[in-house]
Image (cartoon, rainbow, N blue to C red):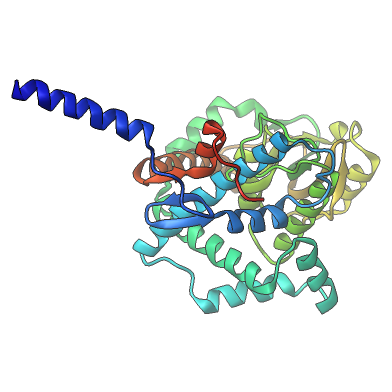
Amino acid sequence: MTRTIYRSALFFCLVLAVGCKKSAPVNVAATVNDRVITFSELEKNFKSQLTGGTEGASEDQLMIQKMELLRNLIDNQIMLQRAEKMGLMAVDSEVEGRFNEMRAPYTKEEFERLLHNRSMTAEDLKTQIRQDLSIQKVFNKEITSRINISDADVATFYNTNKAKFNFAEPQVRIAQILVTASPDPNVHNLKNDKARNPDEARKKIEAIEGRLKAGEDFAMLAQNYSEDPNTAQSGGDLGFVPESGLEKVNVQIRGMISTLKAGQISPILPAPDGYRILKLISKEPSGQRELSDPRVQQTIREILRNRKDQLLKTAYYEMARNDANVVNYLARSIIEGTEKPAK
């Protein structure tokens, strides 16, 4: 009899728990462990990253964009909490240094206009810089510093791909960061960041150009933000392109590549559905490149390191999400349809 009463009480408690789920806190879009991401914060980031040209977009389309952005904010918060626990948060001098680097290529008026176009203040930018630097420190400690490409790895790759190092004609090795005006579901950059229309694409590529001018790593920015589904994961690397292949590309792009020197970056160039920035990695004469060539070894190490770096970062994000206690109230409200998120 006692056992029956206990089971009945337990069943009642379970039904009550399911039927009377705790309501979402006011103005809270998500929580990550004990940290809150508010709807106000989500809206502020939405305006700075996905502004302009939203006329005509349905409420559902806008909500999809906000859901993707919230996922990015959750990931950032997870990584920032790891940076805090590991004592890797960027200090003020590092933030100010990067801020000054980003500001240097512009006049005061140009920089203020750039911030205005992104609906940001200087303090907002510094906050973003602190987050980016701190997360990068975590990756450097947990991933980049542990990647070891052995001589055997290099030799194996070379022997498997030897024909690719036999150039019948001069070659150029190029990398690109591509931003499109139409989001591609096949694009999976690390930040899950995609422009939604021509205005967003223009603002995004200009922001990337500013960060490149400030000295940020091209491959890292490509992994984080490029919208080329074929090269984003490899840091934008397009590999070697024969000179004859350049005849098939846009005259402006062909002319730009011919003027660049190894390591130089192009200005913003038009793409069929957006914009691109190119980096000339190297120019190579015709003939077979041997494994003993330092340039061949460097090329292979970069390819293998980028592959491993992307794989480990993706896995690290998944592991970090698994370890975190995340509640996405925005997603819950959409599924339940019982409350309308703040705009």
